[in-house]
Length: 421
Image (cartoon, rainbow, N blue to C red):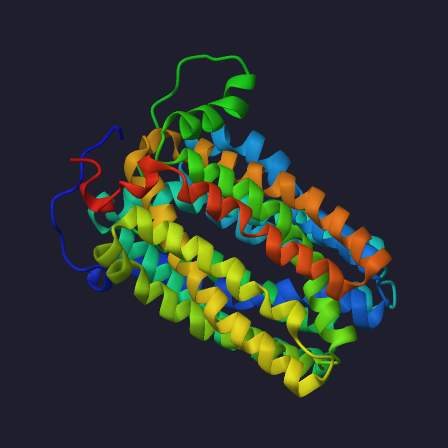
C-alpha cells in the first residue's frame, strides 16, 4: 500500500501552470528525441554502412545502460529532489549530441563515436525517466495520475507524428549527423522550461543507513512483493528481450530489405504517433469498460499480434511502407494504452518514497534483457536475414503479455484511482 493517501480533488490539469511547464518541457524534448532515435542508427547505416550485427551492438549500447543506471540510480533519485536531476539529464544529452555534428563537420565521425554517444544519451535518458516517474505524483497528486500520464503520452504521440517525419526530411537535406544538432537544441529548451517550474519540491526524508546493495535490490523486492505489479516486471523483462531485436533490425530491414528512403521511413514512423495519440485517449475509457487490470492485459496482447505485420511486409517500397504504417498505427495505440495504465498503477499502489528505485528496477529489467536481445537477434539477423529473425521476435513479444494474463491479482484491478482507498 502506498505511504500517502489520494489527494483531494483539485483544478483540472490543464489549468495547473506547473504541470503545463512539465508538459511543455517533455513535449519539446520528446519531439527532438525522435530525431535522435532514428538519427544515430541512420547515421550508422547510411553514412558508415553498418551491418545487422553492428546495429545490434548499437542498440545494445543505447539500451544497455538501463541495466547499470537502473540498478544504481534508483536510490540516487529517491534521496534527492527530482527536478534538478531532470534538468541535469537534459543538459548532459545536449553536451553529448552536439559532438556528433561537430565531428561530422571535421570529417572525424566514426562508428565508436556513435556507439559512445548512444550509450551516454541512453544513460541520461534512463535517469531522466526514473526521476520523471517519481516526480509526477508529488507535482500533481495521485488523484490525477491517469489524466497526467495520458496527457504526457498524448504529447509524445504528437511528437511521434511530427518528429520522425521532420527527421526523415532533415536526414535527406542536412544528413543524419547534422540533423542531430536539432535534437540537442530541444533538450536545451526542455531544461530551460523545467527550470521555470515554481512549485517547491520537498526534500526527501534522509533514509536510515543501509548496505550499498540495498538500493540495487530494494526496487526489485518492492515490485516483486506486490502481486499486482509483479507481472508487469516480468512483462518488462520479456518485452526488453524481444524489443531489443526490433531495435537492432527494424531500421535496417525497412531501409535495406524493403527499400524505403529516409523520408518514407520518417513518414512511416509518424503514423505511429497517430496510433499513440489514440492509445493515450483510449486508456481511461478502456479501463472503465474492462477494468484497469484487464485493459492492461488486452493492450499488452494487442501489440505482438500487430507486430507480425512487420516481417510480412513485401519487399516493395510502397507496399512495404503500407504494412509498416498499419503496424505502427495499431501497435503504438496498444503500446501507449498499456504504458499509461501500467505506469499509473505503479505510481498509485507503491510507496512514493520508493518509486525511483522501482523505476530503476523496471529500467534494469528491460535494459538488461534488451542488451541481450539486441546482440543475439542482431547476430541472428546477420546469419539468417532480418525478415526471418523478425518473425521470431514478433512471436516472442507475446510471451510477456500471456504470462501477465495468468495473474489473477492484475486481472482483478478494477479502477486505479480506488486502489489506495
